[in-house]
Image (cartoon, rainbow, N blue to C red; front, top):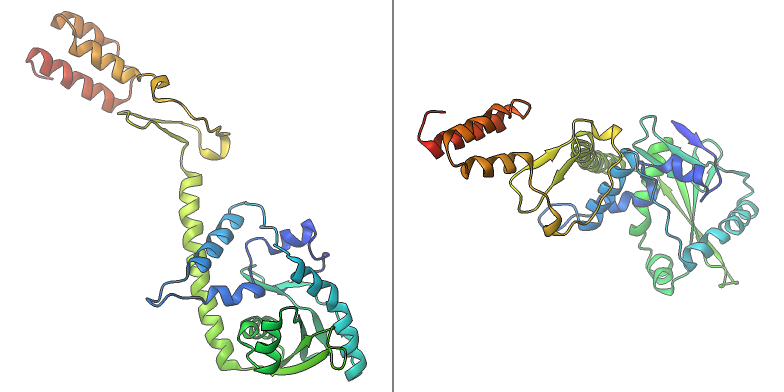
Length: 293
């Protein structure tokens, strides 16, 4: 298990998460359409991870006003928890598996067996869903994932509503459920296979020679240097600016040659060209003058 203690939001913190399936997105990895395929959001997340693993910069974590308020309230909620239950909580940082495939930022550790996960209920809809109706479905994948990663027995889900001063804190203890964790692990491994496939697809493009394709042209230029040694510069070129290739120029001169002698002179000068081009030009010359190639 790897542990990173960099400040949340810092460049080092983002780098520690690069290419890692994180606990806050475990629920996304399990989103499926009616036909069984992953949802568009899950596929996009897999593509983002594949890109990061091939050297892309870690995606900046989007933070809206509600999320920022929740982060600011976390320490207050933890202080209230410590006072209420007489516990001393420990910070955990970002924790991930040794292979850096799966990880998560745990809010706090409780002794040797427990965790604390704080959820500030900013939205009234979320407050009634979670606090009144006890629907914890939005959080269970993250909670079970943390218990799986840290091999702990329980997580206290701290539901924090600071504006409800009569009772700002409600706590629900979620015990480890090995059956639920086994199902989550299976789904995470299946999602990881999708990420790996996207990574392989991207690798095939990145590791191939640089290719400049000309729309409407008969030839494709291939650079000899591998992609890792060439800095590609993209440019928009108008169709009129596309120049004919050497193959096209020689082919035109052969097909418009006045006699076989002129064509033979052209053929004598193509020894430096690729073998497949030489064969094609010899065949064109033979057809022009009715001789064998």
